[in-house]
Image 1 (cartoon, rainbow, N blue to C red):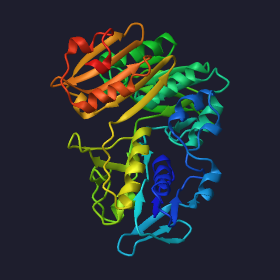
Image 2: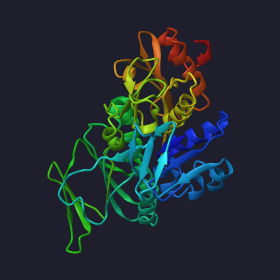
Image 3: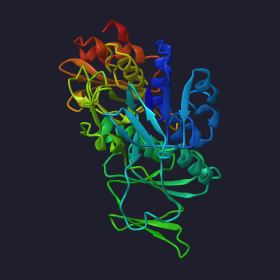
Length: 404
């Protein structure tokens, strides 16, 4: 069993193979100079200095040898031959596989503007990125311009401001996060950021990044013509799935590697999981590619079981979370269905303690709790049941969720 991609999905797949009783060789291949690590803390606690590097590894370094998993790092897979069942690494080594899992993840979307190559301009994806930015922000007093108003941009903004830095955020939305959760809820997060001193320029993009004679960034010129002083610029405008290996090998590609619900690709004995997989979801009947932590875990488990010939399906209800200042949030549900659903609020948006439900045809298709805890199981049960609900009762905090 060979796994290309030493991230959370790949490490989870390796662990699941062993947990399911597979005793043969398992090879886990990664291009980064790091053992598999968790990405969510990078923009949250790790960047803010409340979590140490010890919290990042998926498993301790010793786990791999103890479980007879051959971990190859700093030696990326550069191609695979689906006919010969071989993988070629950058070092020239060739590894033979019976079953192959592609957990190659995603790469940051690059921003093509003048000055993007200046010192002090960086992207945010890897542990090395987080370590470099953490070193820059730790002492406070820096002027940071963030380009991108999605989850990563907002989390970096909160962490940087908490450390005492000046933060200005640009985004193409009128309200940050509105593409994900709508404008009404996006304003809750925006207002909390503004209360903490984060400045927004929305909608706006970067027209150019200016620097000094030493090649160091000094400012960002916005699409509105405003010049924003900057010691640092972080570009967080999304990611692209790493499909190059799969494309070269002739796999079906559409916004990632196409798979069925069992994570089988279009090529025999080849599977895909994590950020790179565009999988058919058995509940929605639609293909979906998720870049979240929970999907990497669920996908790694499903792929491993499918590799062993089990009847497995990636049927989990999608889940993610965020922490921004004192706003803690968890979201479960089907984003594609939520786009056309009715929004029902239980609790107080003003007090930052509420649950938001998305209801379609009187069925809960997604739910988000903000600073209300121990309700995720009930929210997922409501979504999974598919039963019709009374929205007035759904909005009433006095009525227990498990009685709806």
